[in-house]
Length: 252
Ligand code: PEP
Image (cartoon, rainbow, N blue to C red; front, side):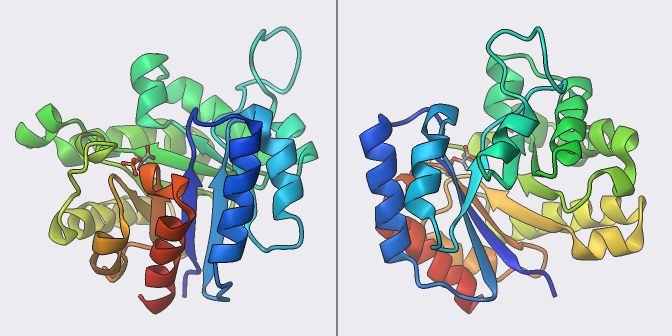
């Protein structure tokens, strides 16, 4: 039985006071459930104060990226060890915004994943197709290439306690969500692909859905057998919406 994971991706939003008050609001809105892990991923500069606001709450702390090397001459990058030092437990990697705006490729994302795992962090590897790829019938080919581009290097044993997030690019921040059938079909495809690496690995790895998940569509999405939680952007910036999605996961 996989423990659900509801993860908030705060992206590049808010000043420090906004981030700490959102963290406090999340803590008071969420009713902890043993069957659901909750995670928030603020911008790097807010990790320490948000971590302080989350203390003893059970809400976990995550980051939105980490460097592809352990330390040294990489101006502007943040090492995985530095994140672990701030009690960060998860790190989002390969988000489509980083693939698109910062030209991150699978090789770089694989190196970031390796560093995350070496520092004891759990990577949340994002994969997803563009609308053009979906319309051209290329969804599975794109997902396979993104998964194999990382797991082909790390192997199942190198992706320790990692999580996959299926985020169709056309659904991110657009208000357009994959139907439950579309989401379940891709999640099942991903789980099958993971099984080619190792059957146990496929069974225990959580696959999150991301792309305009909101309180009103979360129940149906989270009820799908291969949807093990959500990676939530816009709705994670409102504590009540995030808590409502968490409650949907607890029921699902
Ligand atoms: C995301 O960017 O990870 C995301 C899922 O965003 P949104 O929920 O706003 O579509």
